[in-house]
Each structure stands twice: as structure tokens, then as C-alpha cells.
Amino acid sequence: EDSSTEGPALEAAAALAAVAALVEGLKAFLSPYLSALLHLLFSPPVLACKQAGCRESASSIRIQLAGVIPPRLLLVPLFAHYDGAVKEGEAATVSLLAMAQRAMEQMDSATAAQHADACFTFLLKALDLRQKRPAHLPALDVIEQGSVAVLLALTMKLSEAKFKPLFLRLLDWASTPPAAQPDAKPLGRQVALFTAVLGLIERLRSVFVPYFRYLVDPIAAHLGGSAVEAEGHRRKKKKKSTAGMLDVADESSTEAGVVEDTWHLRFKVVQALHSCFLYDTVSFLDEARFHRLLPLLVVQLAAQPPTAVSALFGAQQTPSAAPGLGIDLFGDAVVSALVQMAVTANNDALWKSLNHQTLMATRSQRSVSKRLRAVAAVEGLVGRMREEYLLLLPETIPFVAELLEDPEHQVRVVTQRLIKTLEELSGESLEQYLQA
Image (tube, one colour):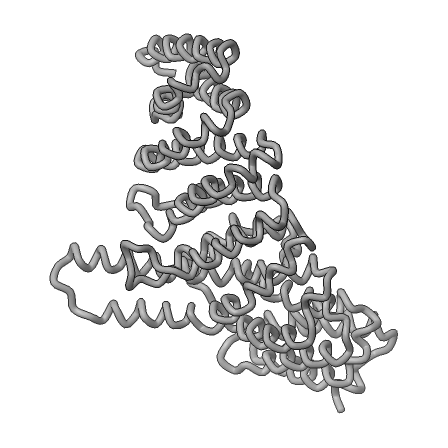
């Protein structure tokens, strides 16, 4: 440690210890000084100080304040400090959101209902950060997850009668361009919406599944080709002449953000569908929704995110995500969603439709990754359905025979693995059928 900073750090630690004692002793009587205290506790020097336990002491004080100051006195100054925290950077913003989460967790249901509207207004502001994309905050995922954690803490304190109008308000907000950007697509807001949806479905599980009826239309829109359009738009823009190097840099940054957000959104939507199917104990996935969503998911077998974007997907996986299938993270998500869709549908006719559309994807001549993902999906169906898949085997055999002649070695390898699984399941050799 740098000895030149040790003295100031010790002084700061002593001051924070005194503040902690005041919080412990005075509790709500400190409310007139909250603004000054928050300014201290979220200041970059304190958040960055690793010496003498300063950072840990400040964190402990924030937790104390959230527990001893009543929400009617705490929330207004805390929310008012948000803009300042954003200007100070990621550490201050994440710390403020963590304090807000703690405050929500400390509320009883009646208090949460009383402050729900004010809290939700704050949450919409916090979730809007991706749409605004401040230049000094290039990595927004951590902050966005912090905002969702606040939302979940609030949600757990509310009745369904209180939560439902707030969720519908979130949907409306996510589809509306910001007032300062009336011509902009609310892409950042849509990403934030589905980050929130993933958090809600993982926390509430089957209780949240019925809310997907409000999400089917947005999901259909997002899986309908917007990522391809965004990528094409980005390439088209590159061909245009620009007035100067600064304009080129600004435009490239903006377009890169659009492509990144579009793929993040698509990945989150596919994950959300997987979680919806996984926790569906209320027959949400009826025949009509099955036939509407199936082709949209099958199309994703061909979707190939840019390498730079794919590298970011690992941090966005949900706790309920299926184990990696050895394809790629986006491909794993699509295959897992298709397989879980079949398991949840639990219907012979729907199984046949899903199996057929997946098998047709193995005939893609242009995309090796699409064929690999399709074979992985069939293998996943066999693994989950077991003996029930034997009903679909007669249709599957001709496609498997074609895959054995695939020009790509990797495709032939995974096909041989699939054949071995099918033979173990059926209890007989399939060689005579594959050569017929």
C-alpha cells in the first residue's frame, strides 16, 4: 500500500466509525443530514478506498441507514441522489441501488404499497440508463442487474393487485420512446424490460407465467428478424460518406450499440421463453401459442450473433439455464428453449410439428452452425422424451441418413452420436433403416 495515502485513509476510517456510531445512536434523528451523509457515502474516494477498511465501513453504514431511517424520510433524498451517483460512475450507482434494495427489503407490505408508485417511478428512471447510454458508463449490465434487484425486492412486498398495474406500466414504458428522443426506437428500454422479466420469472416462477400473455406480441416482434436488420443497417451505414472523422466515430459507436442491444434483447427473449416453459404449471403454452412461437424459435437456429457480442452472453445466463450443450451460448439457449417447449407441450401432435420443423433445419445448405444446432435439438428431444420419442423415429430416420452424408465432419460426428443414443433407446440397430 502507498504510505502517502495511509494517513488520509486512517482519518477517513475514523470519521466513518464516528458516523456509524451516530447512525446507531440517533437513527431517524439523522434524517435532516441524510443528503450530506449520502454525498459522503457515495463519493468516489470513499468507494475506491481499500485501505483501513473504508469501503467496507461505508457499505455497512449504508445498510444501517436503510434499516433505521423510515422510508418516508429515506426514499426522497436517496432517489434524489441518483443522478449524482450516475455522474460519479458505476461504483456509486451500484452502491445506491444496493441501498435502495436494502430499503425495499426492510419494508413491510403496507409500507411498500404506500411507497410503490414513487419507488416504481425511480426504477423506471434507473432502468432507462441503457436507452440513454452515457458515454462514461460503457458497461451497463451490472447497473441494470442492480436495478432489477430493487424491482424484485419491491415486488416481493406487493400484492398481485398492486403489482399488476405496475407491470403493465413497465410494458407501456418499454414500448414508448423517451421524451427527449421521440424518433428513437426504445431498444434499450426493451432490453431492460426483458432483463426485468428474467428476474421476475426466476423469482416468482409459475406465479409470473400468466403475465407472459402480455409479452407474446413483443416476443414475436423481437424474434422476427430485427437482429439481421440491425446488422444489415450497420453494414449499410459503413458505406456512406461522412463529413469528418468525429462523425464517423460517433456513428460507429451508435450503430455498434444498436447491434449489441438487439442481440442482447434476442438472447434475453429466448431465455425468457425457456424459463416460461420450464415453470409453466398453468397451461399457458396452449396449442395456439405453441404454433405461434415454434417457428419463431426454429428460425433462431440460423441466427449467428457477432463474435464480440457472443462473448458477453456468459454473464447474462439465468440460474435455470440448461447445462451447456457445447454449441455456443446463443445456440444453447435456442436448443434448450425448443426442448423445454416440447416437454411442456406434452402432446403427440405438437411433438410431431416441433420435431418436423427442427429436422427441416438440418437440411440447411448455407449454415453449418444451423445444422449442428438442429441435430443438438433432436438429441435434446431424445434425451428428455426418452421412449416417447420412438413415436417420432420413423420420420427422423431419413433425415439422419442424409446427415451421415454431410460434407462437414463435425456434423457427421454429432449425427453418429445421435444414432448411438437412438439405438440405445430403441434397443436395436438402425443400420438397415439408414441404408434403405
